[in-house]
Length: 316
Image 1: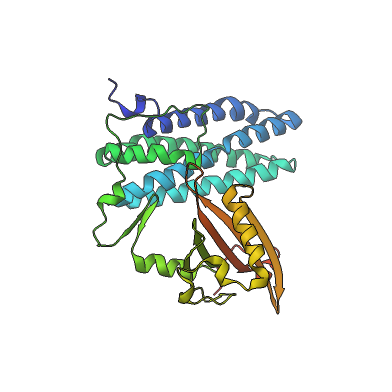
Image 2 (image 1 turned 90 degrees about the vertical axis):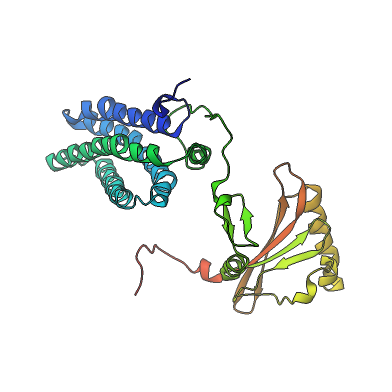
């Protein structure tokens, strides 16, 4: 059995190496041949090559979101910060070059900038494979590598086929081992204390109400921006008993459509004074499609509708 992770199909290290070979191939075959050409052929070729090279963003995003957290967990903090900074510089320079070339501009200064960019990308490949990967292999357990492999598809892959890696033993959910506080709420993607979960839900700028599969109200959030009044006395009541008789048939119809599968959601929007209220109902189902209940999400969308332009900087 192969023991070198770089040669085990589907292992995150194997995928990282294969992605780097693809990046190198794009540079050598789709960009460099056009750097010595001129005119329309050079511009079109370079634009196409740089567009292909843009997949590097996915490669970097996986490194930053899947590998850096483990490096930090094991006390390796400086290298991720430095590498992430260089990654962002590469991303920005790549976007700038693509933008300039799209306007038909490719001067000697641009050529020099492109050469520098390609050199930095090649240097980053060396650092990933010869500095970062050895550090990770020295620290990560097989379970942790399996979690990286499983989560990679959430971000994407830049090679055509990534086989499923099946280690010798099933990976465990590592964070469950770290749960020490009694009463912790363990979810598939994280862990909360009751206090954390309560205040996180209450901090969201929306109202949330959950009704279970038996049409019983089980939960509502207490947002500071609550639109419809809710009191704790509704917990345990049938949802139909929480609405005026004149609107009960509407509520029953919504719940029945969601429960039966006729619909997955239903939306309403109404004006209430100076608010423009967006009310959404979603069927909650498990992985097999079994109905678990309905969640109502309400929000004043008037402030959102008034947004124009862009905001990229933090205000004082």
